[in-house]
Length: 392
Image: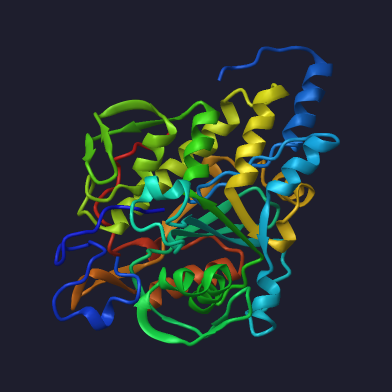
């Protein structure tokens, strides 16, 4: 989820292109704690929890909150949800669906470059779209654990031919940035590209935008994180001293966007911050006083359902609530966060290349509903931002 200002050419790890490398740049160059209230109140709280949809995105990491409601409140929330028919657009030429009780969800953070998002992301108000955060969330059989694999936006990939949800066909392209899939053909082409890279069928698709993310964090009352080093990035407007902070929506958005203020200034460093933030967010949701119901729960649900776009199978409040009910037992301690193994492109340090053998270890493990092997996560390009946000 990125909207940094136009980077200077030639800076290692930046999103810009270097001289002589334009043919490889792709088209996208650019709590309260509740007291004991007796069995009846515990039962009420449990009922409300089932009405609370929590899905992490990256910004993963992103949550979706659905609230119970009757009559017009239900229909208003249901009407907020936008969905896309991924299955129809992709047809049958897809990886085989593995029937082992696991689920795979592609979570994207997007910037539509228009409307409210323009002031958050900068750039022209041209309605164009970018997806700068991509996470494959694998929920293991039994829905007690999850592995989250971040795909760097600057990874050079062979993008397959795809048909978008409007029926327009887009040609295949070689050696282009991963996030060009979304800017070229939207959600369907992003899913198609992830399935081509991983060999894993995506069961669901979930997208959240900048403005909704910022507002949602504010309505949650902020998210607490601890930084081990100071962060000062004028491009993402984030300035934090080392220490513990309760981030506002604006600060949280700055954290998941920042790249110049941490590590080597690359997208890989930003991914590490995003992963740490996702874990903090999941923990926050489990402890903040969300289950008191009333106006606050409705406001959270209203904001969240306006912020997300889903696949058509999740495109109703009932479906989202049912989906969340199967995930609510997964806490931060039950999530393994990794980055798809990559190495810097020696001919253009603004780009990364898939480390094929190690990446295949990751995808094979998930296809077989197994933990990601530690060996696959060692010795890869990392962005050098580990530990800037302390683990909870």
